[in-house]
Image (tube, rainbow, N blue to C red; front, side, top):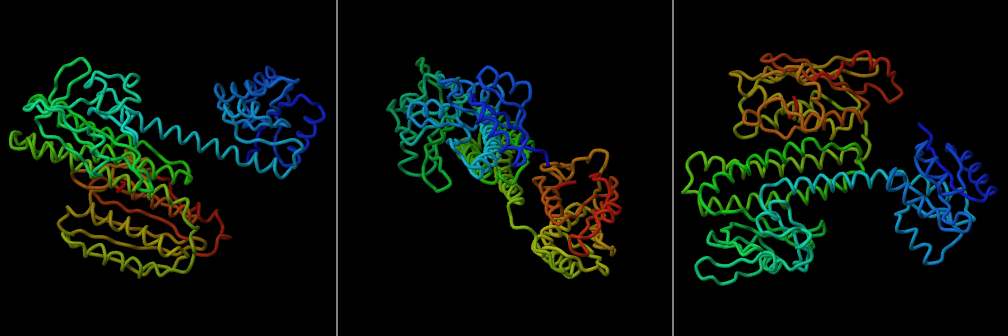
Length: 525
């Protein structure tokens, strides 16, 4: 593994030399030593270390704080402070630079090592948090509906671009103002003010919808017919954090029809954005839960508003408009299921390591096929399963692998007159090789290079349903067994998915395994 590269900033020569020797003893690489803020900035830019040990006081002045702020802002470098000063004013200034730890002089090696080891992990997690926050912000901003979010006091905290345009309020001017002041709603017939949407949603704990005769009075005094809904925002503990309000201009039927098409395109865009979001670490599990929660709020709002359209305007839509409306609600539910699969996909690396025991693969495959083929509306398929070697595997995880592969085989062969699913295998010294084959649609392997990556689909969702995560989950499970997976296929001629499983404990020869492995040319469920 690469050594952690560290820059030392310390104005006392003896202390700097002591720190350097300790770091070298602990197995780290020291890229340089600086005794001034300017020299620290210059060395950091030139050497690009993994982190910096920074003395707060340099030559009697707290220059280390300014240097740390520059390194954090310009170079995105984690900084650990070295200090013998603990006065509140100095620590307050240091805290503003968001340090990754403090080491108080004199220090011991154990404390030094622990602080250094924790800093890169925290730094990486914060990068991922920023990425997710940016992604969610961009998603909300790109939605064509007006989206307004409040805190628990019903004060405005967020307006997307569509909300700014509809209400006439900018986010800067509206932020912190009561929702009722920004969203002035009246009844078109009685001209009476309506209840505060955010307060009603918080009070009743349910989705609040207004009748089609609701008018929004914009900041300039213009009156616009709107359809809207408001619902609580909850945290993971079920506590209310605030309210999200979704508004749409409902001035006339033509505008409503256009909105149906626009919402359909926006849901597809959300799906595409979500498909591009990949996890690189199992440490994202906690953040995946937050993504699932936050993404479901606008999806529930989209489904709720489409429900209002269905109740109030369905009879005025032509057949194409009604079809678009139904597709919006179906797409919203489909994305919700995709979020669940995504969360399960991210959790895989954090689960307990596989418990490898001898498994009767033939018996397990027959059981899985029997369960899957008994699903209502499942087209009967012929199942072929010859003699299979016993393998070392985690039985629960192997059941998932077989369920995904046999389920795919059933799905993609369902349009054949006589679907056939075959499971086979051959014994090896260190690894056995198994396969699941179908006579279904097959794949063009020149277009399927990323088949085992998340959210990759190679068939129309109207022909075959799925979120594009099945084979990615299979690949991760097999990798945790030290195994491989690949595919052979031709369009219209079915597909054969090969995978390996250990025949003996981990001391088996890797060269034997590599010899039977194929390049990952690659259909995802």
